[in-house]
Amino acid sequence: MGKKEERVHRLMNLNEHGVTDSEVVRALVALGNGERVELDTSRGLAPGLTEADGERFRRLISKAAEDPREFAEEFLPPPLGGRATNAGALKVLSLLKPRLALAVGAGPTASSGGRSATPMRLSLSYFHDYPDVESVLTYGLLLLLDSNREYGKSLSRCHLPSCSKFYLAKPNPKGGPANRYYCKPAHRDEAHNSKQNRKPRRPK
Ligand SMILES: [Zn+2]
Image (cartoon, rainbow, N blue to C red; front, top):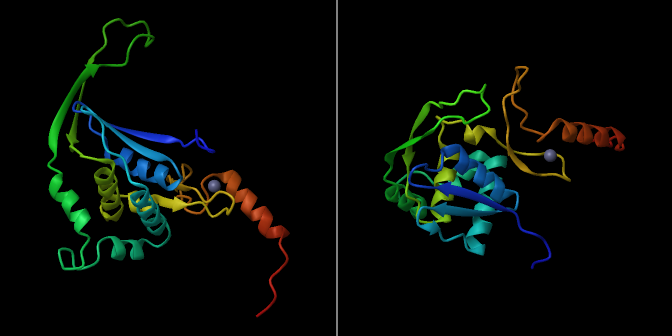
């Protein structure tokens, strides 16, 4: 066993229930936070990331959180399809041939007010047959770049130095902007307190 127990973040991409976009993005966040991402499929566990690929993805995730523009230029240099374009990302796009998956299952079971008959539940989703962890995470990076989706805007990194965790900023329930600076209120307070205790800066 290693010195540190490595946490595993597992994605389930089964024929009857494909992994969802938000699950893919959350796996990127987990990878950025040092977890190992596994991809379970109906054929078994898919090949994982090499150490070098893990490093490359972590670097791209930091960039996406801290400097989305630079991330876009590095990951998919313009013009898309030109010489400098990320061939790996385009390969992933060409591999993905989604098919519509229909899952039929029982509704919420038991304990729901003593009703014995549970309504049938249907769910439709797009299923992508990702061959490995690299391809599912590459798709995740593309999701971050999609300006029609919120993932890229919500990917944040906690500004409390002792935390520095990646997270997806959720809209403030009381209204107002999502907190893109601190992963939780306690870390905002901690950062603000330590700022107050610091010596005032010398005037320039
Ligand atoms: Zn934090």
